[in-house]
Length: 270
Image (cartoon, rainbow, N blue to C red):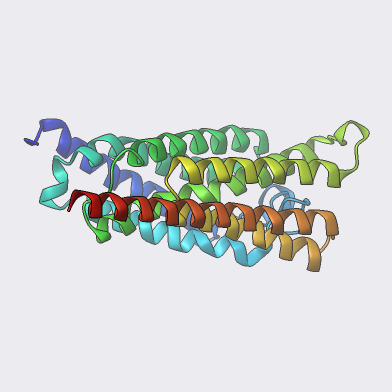
């Protein structure tokens, strides 16, 4: 495709958004004087705050996501990517997601939990839209598959789990008591929904492993948190483990079938 004047604007905006995202993340870990996320908003998002809060090591996935976003930003500056159809469909969306990421951190820092819920829901919608767009076409190389598909898959997968923890924290702070139902009923129900959504994404995305792995990662650390730290909950721990296995298993199964189908078509064409 021939370059357009808007291509340079897109590349520049993505880069500026990455800077905003990185600065926001630094504030989120307390580098620039901000309160670490686990301690902000009265500890509402700490690893022991709700039944759906993943154990602390789970959050290390952000380092991988941020590294991937840096790689994505560098990749989109390659001459071959300036007028790439994939970049044109994804660049602005990824840019919005990075700004929303920073906005989420700042809203939590300010103690605005319900605002943070709205922001992370907007982030989730943005990443789903990106997923639907990059799932339409295959990456042109294994590098692009890792830098673009892999990064955005991890980003969406982790956010899918984080949004549940965020909503649970906001509801707890608001005094929500679950209409008299036991907390475990709610946590297991939410985890069942996460499993269904994860399986649906695996099918829609033809078994994208990075996406499923990130969801399974978050769910596995919920299992660890609820089996080794307060508030302990055996039903929640088991439900999270089962959900993680189902999502990852679905992605592997779909991916294997897709690969076999592709191999069959190549043999038939030969």
